[in-house]
Image 1 (cartoon, one colour):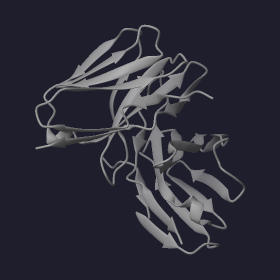
Image 2 (tube, one colour):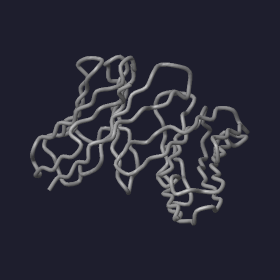
Image 3 (cartoon, chains in turn brown, red):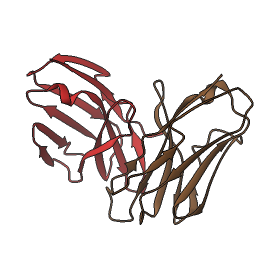
Length: 115
Length: 112
């Protein structure tokens, strides 16, 4: 079975450029999460969706970040304009509705470097 | 803000040794999950504990949820190089069963 698929795996770009990260969740999963991971702050939840609807975006650092989920099989996280402090590994995860404790299934991440 | 504190932050041991890592909070969680993350990959779920005092075993790994559901521990017996990785705990509070609260992790290196 295909897991969560993220692209690109690596992105290096210059400050001020627009960055778009992509995610395909596991088929049938109705929750999708975007995280950012750094050594200093660990895993931070940016936003999550349920049935393609954003539920909690309180973790989105500022207006430069936006996320969309146009359908059940695709989501994007966009940073515009990008800044060096946005450098991190960005993960997408998906999960099923259920009783507490449903596991989140993670992609392999996008390693983003802003120069 | 709910926090999960993990200790130790780093651990380097020899193959065959035993170890315990801890996950502590002042908040009560409805459940707690342990994940392992290897370099270049996303975290992978190892176990979920739900009931206070619960103990779960996964081969050489033993997970315990504290009686008050505020803390958890992971004990590894006879560690092997394949156990190397970042161990993350994540708690779910009763009010929101989707938003996990994450610890910073324990980075474990098992040397052959």
